[in-house]
Length: 340
Image 1: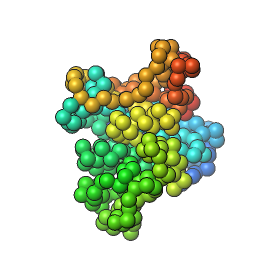
Image 2 (image 1 turned 120 degrees about the vertical axis):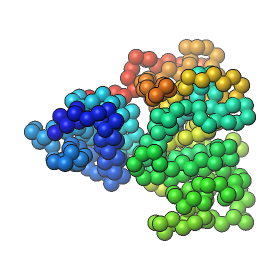
Image 3 (image 1 turned 180 degrees about the vertical axis):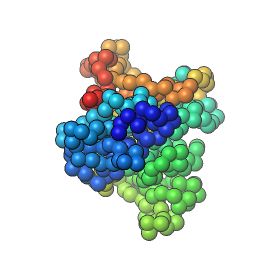
């Protein structure tokens, strides 16, 4: 049956690979038994099968949490599995966090006037929708809501909308922005315990088809440094939102990186030179180059853009007395996706 995969044009093979990924994501949400096998049915649709020697499988999930993919599939499908399967691995893990930034060659995500539409091309923007569809929640900072009024829905690909989580420490955002009133998906506002909420309903917005109100307000402990990323991750995981996508902006992604709660960092570099503007990653520096982060990585072409897929699960905060040297030849895909 896998021979059918190789008869498809690239666009159709990519679509079929995405259908496999959506099925794998559904199995993750259902807490399916550790070992499962995905192949094509008689109508060439992805399905779960009992593994048999005479039944070739496209993907399978092993008891140790690793995904394996067949080597007998088109390159475009193999690339999609290598890029997205890490988000679905290790069902027993308490959480998994991926972040993404789209930047120019000179590391800008917006101009000095705040214009960020659009840094990267259509292929990378579609990638964002794929990440949303495979995540339980997508996280942004309040400044991104004000600057972009984003929808954060899954429109460019098939798949469910993620819960939209907005970091609003002092409860300063009003509910006039689209993601609070569009009746498309749940939106959670995260406030610090010191926020003045006397005049604000804890639940508001339109009622969704599920019967839930669109907007909820959740509280995290107060901190002088703003909302603590580790507390955010733990709170969301405790409420069943374990696969998290930090979409922006640059300050929010940087804070999650420096808090060492990211497992994956995607940086899409577009062939643009912006000059003065909003910086992408904004991290504390190191005194010596040997102490710089050198995370394992893989590269993917997305139209004219290049996506760097970094495995940052081993990156920790760096100070002058520690070394963050890692083997740059190590594949970031090996711990989570296997080829057989």
